[in-house]
Image 1: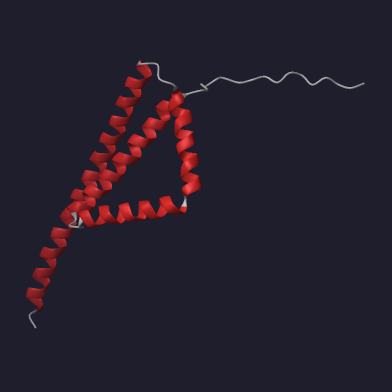
Image 2 (image 1 turned 60 degrees about the vertical axis):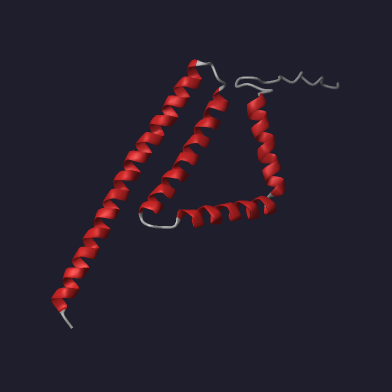
Length: 135
């Protein structure tokens, strides 16, 4: 058993892995910065166009979550994880969750319609008439 050969191989493997981890951390930091920049740009554009604050937050959250998922998948792909099988796993889980949470997802869709169609805006309220007191 050649101890020096094992140590040399281990050093090369650990160096390669360490560089990959450092690269993944760099991609994560840059990606998070770019995601926050994209959300800020979209929010600023929507604010300039006088979009309802509820829709503004809703779209900002959707964009942020979607881009974060894409960033994590990209980092996993960088480490050599097969992303096509990961995508199939996510799709299968989505179908299973959708079937199990049918009622919940219909409420989510109804809430999305309320936000998009905007029958109410921020600041709307209905005052109730004062109840007459029986004497």
